[in-house]
Every structure is written in structure tokens, then in C-alpha cells.
Amino acid sequence: MDNLSEIVENYLNKYKVEDIINQNSKILFILESPHTQEIKQGYPVAGSSGIDMTKFIYGRESKDPFGKIVSQIDKYNDLYPNLSEFSILNVSSAPMQKEGLKAHELDSGDGQVVAILEKLRVNYKSKRHKNKDWNRIKSILLEDFKQRLLLALKQSSSIEYLVPCGRFAEAYLDLIKELEMSIEERKIISEIPHPSFNQWFHYDSMEKLKRVLEEIGIS
Image (tube, rainbow, N blue to C red; front, side, top):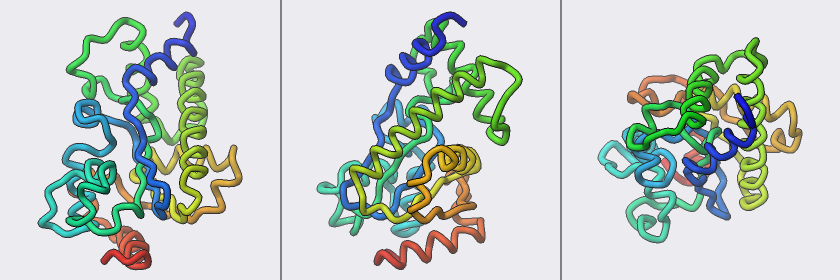
């Protein structure tokens, strides 16, 4: 693939969904990547996974996606208290699945990039890959993730907890920790599943997140 770095960076910029960083937040949720609803709405966890996050944090009767309310705290803080305690960041700022871009007509470069991102997404356990293009795209993805994460921690120095949601997010955060020691100054809440498919209500490890929420006054 010619000019690979430029093609990947263009892809990440073209389909970017901005992170939500609230200045005085204490918890930074780290998720995998945007999908269909995130591209449509313009904020992370905009679909059913986001609704499950809100239900877990604020009660089963909640109906709004977490990304929606955290990105509009002035509008929703009366209904959902302490929203300013939360920030949200994706490992990949653009979709890692072609299905997430079904409303868009991809050019050949974008199609090649997302095809490799799909492979990286399911092969998250491997630090290095036999295919050199996979490694090059992974390096770009990791660098972009690292820079956005460091910027988030600078913008919100009050962040105490990093909560990677799902094995992919946890694996990529582990890779960043090896490169950037300052991240270890925060407490990492591990073994939290991705909030898709109602998983937040079925894992014993969610008790760790419940304790953190109670600590900051949400129970």
C-alpha cells in the first residue's frame, strides 16, 4: 500500500469521532472505537452500549446513551448528577469495522485501511504481526491513541481512574503503559467488559467499578 501513513492518517481524520474530556473528571472510560451510531451522532458510545452504561451507573430506568449525556452535562446534569466526573475516549478515533461506515462510500484507500483495522481488532493479543502493513497501521493507531490519552490527562489532571472497557481497550492501554510511564500514576480498573450485549450486568468484575462510583458519590 503506497503512502500508507498518509492514507491511515487521512482515514482517522475523515471519520474521527471526538473524545469527550470534562475538565474536572475523575474517571476516564476507554473504549475501542466508534460504530454506526457514533458516526451518526458525533460522540462516543451513542448506541445501545451507551444506554447500558447509563443504566449501570444511574439505574435501569435510564434511557439516554452515556456519550450523549456526558457530552452535554449542562443539559442533563439535573437528571443525571455528577456527569462532570466522567470523560470518554476511544482507542481508535475512527471505526475499526467496515459496518460502522455503511452510510459512507469508501474509496480504495479507506477500504484497505478499515480491512486491516478489522484484523487488528480481533488480533489484539499480539504485540507484533507477520504482516508489515498491520504493524505500520498498529503503530500509527497506538501513537494517535497515546497522544489523545496524554492530552486528556493534561486537560483533566483530576482524572484518578482509567477504565478500559473490553479486552481490546485493555490490551492497547497496556501497550501504551510500556511507552509512557506517567499513565501508571492513575489507577487502572481492569477486567471491565465492553458494555455491549448487556455485559455490564453479568460480570463479577463490575463490583470494582461499583466501588469506584460509590467513592465519587454515585451509587
